Length: 429
Ligand code: UDX
Image 1 (cartoon, rainbow, N blue to C red):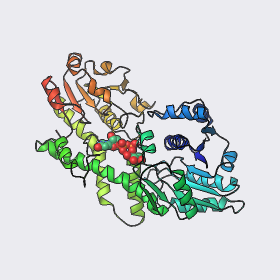
Image 2 (image 1 turned 30 degrees about the vertical axis):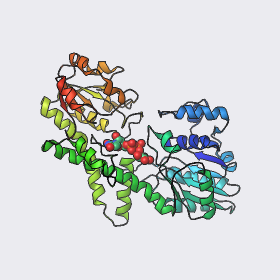
Image 3 (image 1 turned 180 degrees about the horizontal axis):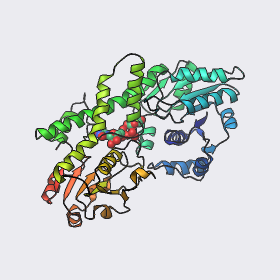
């Protein structure tokens, strides 16, 4: 089977590389000629551990190639994965214009049976829409199917997740499409759920929303833990041992970010509203997440008083470790809040950088961690990069103006920090 992946962004690049690794012949298509040129040279335009190595391996093996020639690409491949972006509109709905464009291109250019599959998170009902768009654009009535096969990979662990999924969801109304997708994944060992396209589309949203729910639950509970002198980390450990609850996604902090959780939770709430259903639990999940960064700032202000002209070191900008992605990163909200209080910000992240925007002009981005801590009145930990655990805090105490550490990711050992003479405050302990 020849596979075409349309859109070489995060999901598209990973999908393309993983299918090549599974032994299929893959073509990556994008309208961005610069991106395609870079990919052809073995270079990724984002940071993802292990992915560039796979890219180079399969350029060499000849399993993967890239193109901007959409007519030829559509005509010479039978399985077409749509991996173009679905950015959020101001009302939280997904902007489907790129998906529509791709569906129309496929309809116009197809020259025989095509199986078209969505991998990116798309609103419930998209499979039906794509079917209608392709049908309306067709110049000849070639047969085609449209299926949903959502992707559950995490940034920073994309290769691992995509090669070892917990489950494969196939949303399809056609036996032919289901069989093709099953043979595509034949070498992957995990449960396969075969269902309707609508169900598959909702499984993706519901999974992300449930995980966001767990995070906001523990984050709100952490506020209570602080008030009643209980350690939230121990609460999470104790709860997580119950297999019905599970230990993951119970790490309290300054909230979730990234390209998925915030967007998907809002989109699901909107879908519910459009169907006259209120997802009130999820509305609270969003509310807790939007205020969680402020909790860290409140703690800092309680200790330092006015933050005006205080030198604050921010460690970590990316929405989580092992990525340079700053979309919806809680660190951005922390920075914006501190700027509004006229604090002096020294920022260090091993990979991520601030957008080139006037809004962040007053922030000093440091290339060395020590430079960020120099004369700091407080350190705010915003991303749990593993290298931050290895900081020599005894030495840093001499570098800082005041030994205050506010750990927005609960990543340091409170006892050790306090033993070194730091004022240390986590989220919920
Ligand atoms: C998520 C889903 O995990 C993945 O299945 C889906 O396909 C895309 O969305 P991702 O956004 O890459 O993946 O990151 P994830 O590791 O899930 O973390 C999301 C956010 O939640 C991060 O900001 C992270 O810091 C935060 N988080 C996670 C917590 O605050 N506490 C936790 O216990 C876990």
